[in-house]
Length: 120
Image (cartoon, rainbow, N blue to C red; front, side, top):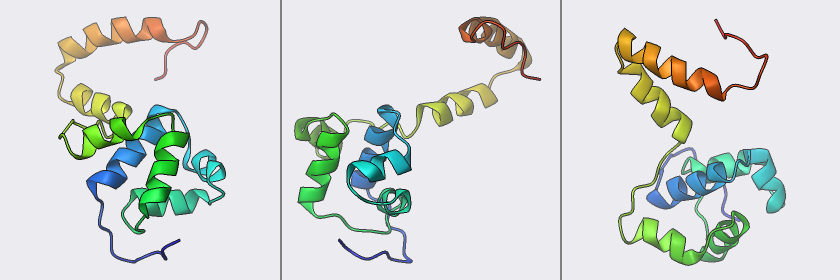
């Protein structure tokens, strides 16, 4: 395995691997255990501090439940990679005015488990 670098080079490939991991609701520690690596090694990979051989990329893609065709669609065909659904939703919410936030709140609160109440 390549050693860690102090220089960050976040590549599209690293972003894709992060998306695939998050979409399967795996923490970095859980993903690391799949590959007999530490969570911090997964972090270094996803933050562009470690290069990966093609065989490791394939192993990660398959373990995350995707195919190399899925991966290649993101890399070669320019398919947009959602970085993190939660982050994207929060960015949208921050742009809403109070009236729209009230409407959104009325919808979202219905998705909370019973008895969780208000969070403020």
